[in-house]
Image (cartoon, rainbow, N blue to C red; front, side, top):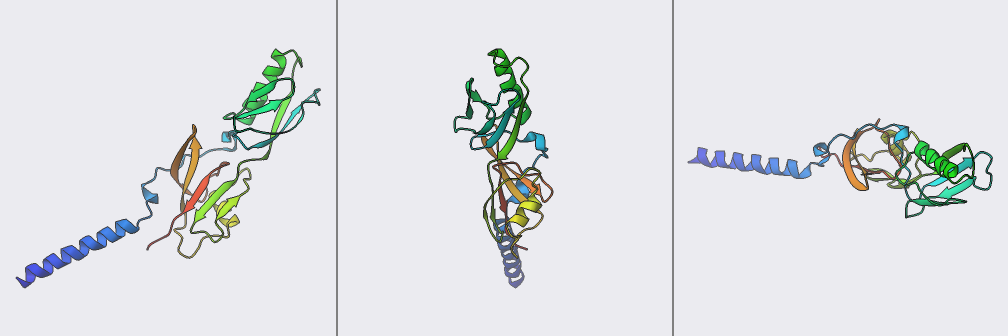
Length: 192
């Protein structure tokens, strides 16, 4: 009888320990891995500030902010839809529209980012918050900008939520993963 009671107690303690361990899990290990991206993967989105230059058309050259509608108001062309395009695709779109309208015969258009959507870092970080995006930014650099990990942080792995086809997708990333404008980074607490 005593043996049966000890065995039940051992099973109960093990079950409680397992439940506590799984309850304390950050859930980060259940996420799919973040696909690697390059600088060319940056897509234009509302709120981005861009510098556009059109050779031989100074009246159209200048700084533009992408509206919430995903377009810019471009002289001589009115509204140009740019959200979701890469910089090269935007250059080609504007050049094609200028040529179609017979404004410039062979337009040479360049687009440069001035200020892109900020990134957000939260969780077990010394200074969580909003930070300016810089091209080539990695998770390691973002954590460093935010003052580094707290002593409770699960280091080396974070969750990143980013918009993919206008839907938020959360995935597991390591410190070498490249950050894109608008990414939300969550650093989880390490329990053991």
